[in-house]
Length: 427
Image (cartoon, rainbow, N blue to C red):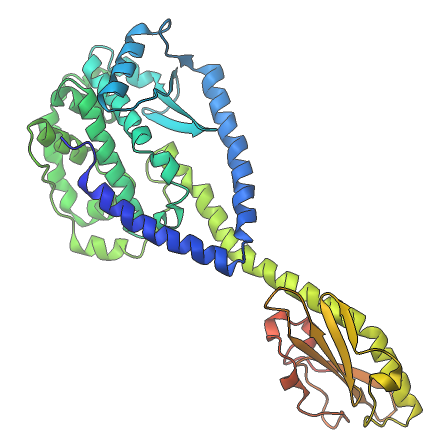
């Protein structure tokens, strides 16, 4: 029996390609700023995960050669049977959840066996082996390590959930390899479905026949958007594998496929492990919004520096216009005794051309470097000088040194300060 479900490998390759392209695009368009969010999330995850591990170590009972000897021997045997070279630390923990979990912290793997499951399977050690083997399968296949890299594709409709369901089928195969027989493995799964006292008397074959009900629209739809196959399907697959047959599962409703195509995966369908993806999804959405917004804010701040440095030039031009009767012609840097070259990032130069100011920016940021912002003076009937910035409009009848000044500003409107944007009128 191949321990890896056939679809997992294909879905992993597709997910890896899509995720690699997505990460490359994110790095390129964010100009590396996404790494700040990755670092921030890494720190948040470190503290959150450390709290979980500390709780497990401080509250759970460590399975070892001198504690729960029967569990320790069975756990070590499972690791050998599936080829896991280094056995992770194993703990028993009492919780309100009837399941198990595997996790990782600072390079070390942990498996947590929940007390209620151990109680349910205390008379069926082979079923307990399935329970252990399933969690060890996640570690052997390095599902936890691949999650960050595959994160972009994991949100995609159909693909993200399909890959996670395939991983579950793979881990069921690892659990079957650890069990003595398929019947015991099925009982290991049934412990999740029924009452503790009913596990041994529940018919796995009858339960597996419930897969016939999964072909309807609603069951098909909710499985397609969920991280876990229906438990009846998993039991059915184990039953077939135990007979050395290829598992045959019923098809899904066509319209459920169509609707599921529009539902992104958030990873909150079944367990704490899947639910942990929800904050990652939220952080990703916030980052997608915040990174461009931060870049625009930073660029506008750079442009404002140029406007601040041009204030002395505006004052000098206004004074020159007052002296020469408001004539624009010939009023340049020499006339106001201020140099055109500034060479003080982010401003490269401030040229005065017939009283208009042309601010040229410098630096390595392509949104800023080499771009121009133009300021033109408007002389009112009372002789007062009012400045028009960028794409902002001038009042009708205003006397300006150049009437088509907006076309000389090369910044897009969204990066300009509010007073310089199109539709803003100078008063």
